[in-house]
Each structure stands twice: as C-alpha cells, then as structure tokens.
Image 1 (cartoon, rainbow, N blue to C red):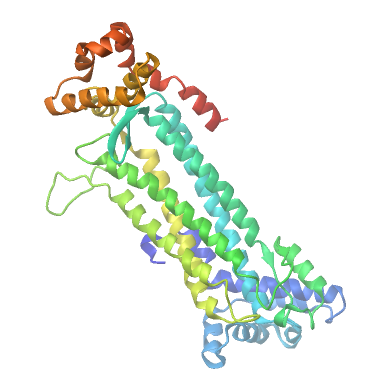
Image 2 (cartoon, rainbow, N blue to C red; image 1 turned 90 degrees about the horizontal axis):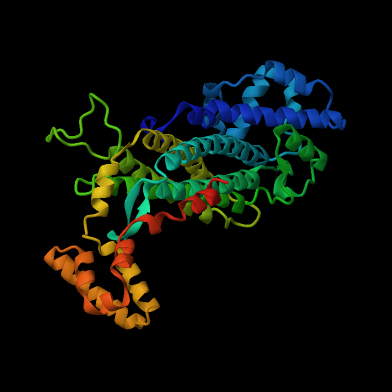
Length: 430
C-alpha cells in the first residue's frame, strides 16, 4: 500500500523483516518440538535462536539465484547458525511456514483493527448520547420522510460497528490455525505432535486437516469481513457527505485554520476526508473477490493464490486500518449544526406529518384508501402553493368532522416521534 494511506503499526506487521521473523519463530518452535521428541539432536533450536539473524538483503540475494524464498531464507540462517541449522525444516514443506506465517500476520493485523473499531464505538457512543434529542429530518430516497434525531443516526452506526467487531473477532478466530503437516498434509515425514507444539507456541490451533496448504475458505472469510467493515465506513461517509452539501448544511467535517478547500475557489470547504474514505472502502471491498477465487486450487496445492495474497494481505489490512483511524478522527471532530437541522425539518411546511393525519382518519372510520387520497391531495396543494399543511387540514370539512382541532395541533408536533428514543437507546447501549 502507498505510504499516503498507511500507518506504521500495520506496515511493520507486513514488512519483510517481520515476515522473516515469524518464519524464524516457526522454524525454532518446530526444532524445539523435534528436540523434545528426540527427532533431532539437542541444541539446534538454541543455537539458531542465538545466531540466526534476519538479513533481508542477503535472503533476496540468495533468492535471485535459487528462485525459492523459503530455501533462500533457510540458507541465510544456516550461513549464520552453522552446521546444526541443517536440522531445521525436517519433514516440513514450504507451505507449513508460509501459511502459518500468513495467518500470524492476519491475526496481528486483525487485533489492531479490533482496537480501531473500539475507538470508533467509543466516539459514536459519546456523540450519540450528546445528540440523543437533537431533532433532524429522516430521509428515504433522499426525500424528507419523518422526524428523528441525530443521536438515533449515530446509534444506528454504533450498533452496526458492534456487529462488525463481533464479525472481525470471529474472523480472527477462523484464521488462527497452524499447519505443520508436510507435503500434501499427510504427516508422512513429520510427527503430528510437532504441529501441536508449534500451534501452542504461536497461540494458534492445529488445522484439523490440511492438504499441502491451509484451506483458503478461512482466508476468504477474513477478507470478506474486512469488505463488510469497509461498507460500514462508506455508509457513514456517504451520510456525512450528503449532510455537508450546501443545500443541507447540517454538519461539516472539521476544517483546520490553514486548510484550503480549492485551488480556484477560496470559499470552498469540501468533505475530502469522507470522500477519501468512500474511495478507500471501494479498494478494501475489491480484495474480497480474489480471496474467494483463491478457495479453488488444483488438487492438494498450487500457487495461484500466492501472488494474490502477497498483494491483498498487506493492502486490505493496511488500508482498512487507515480508513478506520481516519473515520474515528472525522466522527470525533465533526461540526454539528442543530439549528440547520431544525430548519430543514420544517422545510416542507409540515408535510412530514401526513402519515399521522391519515392514520387518525382511519381510526375515525374512513377507509385507508380514501384517507390516503384526501391527505395526498392536501399535501400536493401544500407543496405547490407553499402553504402550511396544518392550515389546509384544519380547513378541510371532512377532516374537521372526524378529528378535533386540538388533536390536529397535537399531530403537528415532534413529541410523538421521539417518545421511544429512550427505549431504543436502552436496547443499543445496554
């Protein structure tokens, strides 16, 4: 991933240095187990641990000749650790190291992503409670529907990210497996106890059955969850972008003192952060498809998945981490305009109360079809002639004969729409 959309905490996980360190940890753990079960002489693991250093450039030099990354890595370690290092990798195959290492990196990344989500949950909870009773208009199809509060919008996002946290924890659990089973996964040349030992050492679980690789449905699940989280990021970002439009102006991304919005128009304050988040979300979602296509490999193993994972492993995790961190910053610092929310709420001269009038008419004995037609005609007149709907309702003889003036006044108030907010908040923030 490009540095512009990367944070060091994640790029360190996906660095060559960290990858080779994990490989070395796997080989040392396997050697410890082999010593324990008297498969190799004692002292191999300790000397490799003491003398084996990660030299990325040297590994690359060797790989340029042998065209095999794991062999290049083992050769480099042997150069430093000496003759005893020949016992490393006994009965193992490259995928034992590659797949187990990849899963370790995914787990490391996933745990940071969970922390990112925790931060967003913390901010959303605080902001939702702050704006719990701040009235604003609810929209469907982009059109004014009925009143709600800004706090309810934020509570909806909070609940969604609670689900995302659970999904991600499930995905981390799904990917937390280790395979040290040798060629085609039969343990023909390695004791299954080695796999158990290495798994415990790395805080993973033994893969119940591997071929020569860990099955890729596990990885597809993980990357699909990242894609869903990206969809949630875009959902919030799209809402903020809409609400920042000049015609709406209900909130705004924070705009720093020396920030410039346009090279041509000095007045511009554009929602660049949430636009950026929308784009980054598209990127993360795009990685789900190749991870799904990686499930079907030839027989017990091919390497068509390898180039895919070398790209999507770092890119999906690094990009999502950056996006989650940026979203937290946007939510923390966004500027809210409650007066504009109230102004927009009243923009349609009371059309937003049309459903309640219709329902009261049906309660008074009018058929739903007739009640709908009556209110719809009044709403059309209110809109076309810019007259308050309540005035037309009070003048309508049929409505006045069925609903009292006092009841009509009660209908045209927000209180009914907000009466269950506490109930909803208790369900969400229990």
